[in-house]
Amino acid sequence: MERVSRSSLPADVLQLNLPPGTSREEYTEDPVGHADPGTTGLPYAVYAAPASAGAPVAVFRRTSTAPNGLSSDVYYLIYRTPDGEVQVLSGLRPDTPAGQGKKDPMDGNRSPMIQIAGISWEVATSSREVQGKADLGDAFVTIYAPNQATFERIAASLVRYDRR
Image (tube, rainbow, N blue to C red; front, side):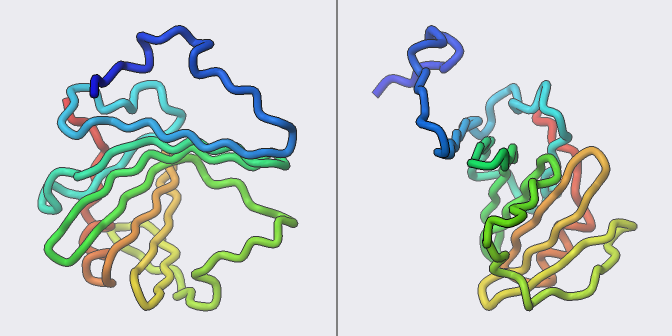
């Protein structure tokens, strides 16, 4: 199998006209260790776990459009730590699915806002993970961690992502 850069293909090769009312998701993988982090020109900053978490095992950007104008643009950094998988997601503040009837699976399990390294985090727990969300000003960051201690360690040590 040969890997071809998307930028080297004519634009119309990947063109698809979707019927009205359908949604679209696009994943753009950024090979781990690649010289360009793929974050140049994004409308938000990208944050990463501290070096103690190791190098990310997966790096990609997910853009999505949905009916009723809902959309998202999120950059994912996924790590394998001794405690389990950690995900650090950076993006714009997500659109609210008003009137969509969608329920956040973490609803009902919310903890009060907690302060970590001067940042207010909305933290929720489930039987499988801890999820924390915070607006850092230049990005909306969500961290998924296997437990509270790992979440707090990662949240306290976030760094701007730049592999150059």
